Amino acid sequence: MRYLSIAQPIIQRDDISAVKKVLKSGNLAQGPEVAKFESEFSDLVDGRACVAVNSGTSGLHLALLALGIGPGDEVIVPTFTFAATANSVALTGATPIFVDVDPLTFNMNPEGIVAAISAKTKAIQVVHLYGLPAAMDEILKIARERKLLIVEDCAQAHMASIGGKPVGTFGDAAVFSFYPTKNMTSGEGGMIVTSEENVALICKSLRNQGMMKKYDNELRGFNLRMTDIHAALGRTQLKKLSDWTNRRIDNASVLSSRISGLQTPVSPKGFKHVFHQYTIKVKQNRDSFISKLGDKGIGAGVYYPKPVHALPAYALLLDLPVANTLCNEVVSLPVHPSLRMRDLRRISSNVNALIETGDYS
Image (cartoon, rainbow, N blue to C red; front, side, top):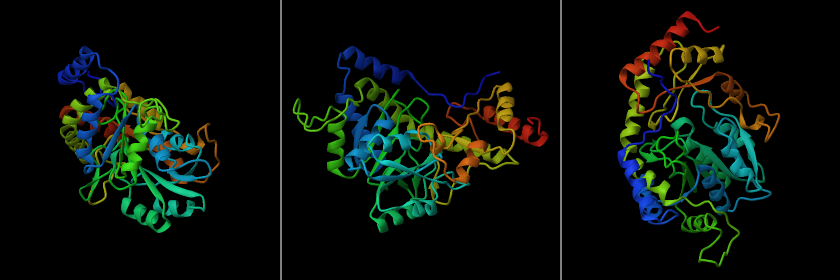
């Protein structure tokens, strides 16, 4: 029986050949492959400037710094997300202000954003969780009325869109991740996206020791460059992203049509969900449910078991009930492009059997 993993990077011959070519060239650090990757990725985000870095977290950190976020500022973030969303804010010296999420979409609740705004609020860092765009129309309206910056955390949302407008093009800056479990990978890596030329220039400098001109070091920067090795892999993966995205959407559709008796993912009208994760809610005995699926050779994951505000790094006592509940109920099932129809039937049949019989209490 084939084990169905929760995530499975797809590495093919063209990926390996591209990396080998760079290795044989001897030019391994940031170079022409990175520049080409940035140019090609720009086509996904309406031609916005792109700056490749060594991870999505680095990208968020640099984007915030380039936008002027720092000590004394507050940035509103969802608490139901990966810790990097808040960590990137804290690393600038600013304070992440946590808000609750919608129980159906799992994305930031606009009402919570309004309630969290203070005189110190400088920006909203929006997460398009699991590949579903956040409620950007409402969030943009809030940001414009309050003159707040918007940074989009698109780590899980490559090719997601609202009304045909791709995520990464709504805010002042956005960041994508290319970690191995993402919808495409460069091994490790991230991409900053912005419509502001000056923001892009600052990010390029900060990723490279703060150098606009070699050895001048006009800024106090970092070493957060992407290598040509990683960019070469990213470029070949990018060519296959559209096909893989369509497969994820199709796989999710099959699962939703077959699974019954519990909440399956929602996609508001006009929203393109790209299903980095296919997440259901199991309201009782979740750990046993996951264990029983594992016994059947089906991987499942919990993203995320604790709200960020409750993690030891923050340890805040906040009343954010939706996130607290979701952290005890969410289960993500395999949805990646490597799954076949018989795999999807197997997943849905086993989920349904557990729900119907209650054989996981």
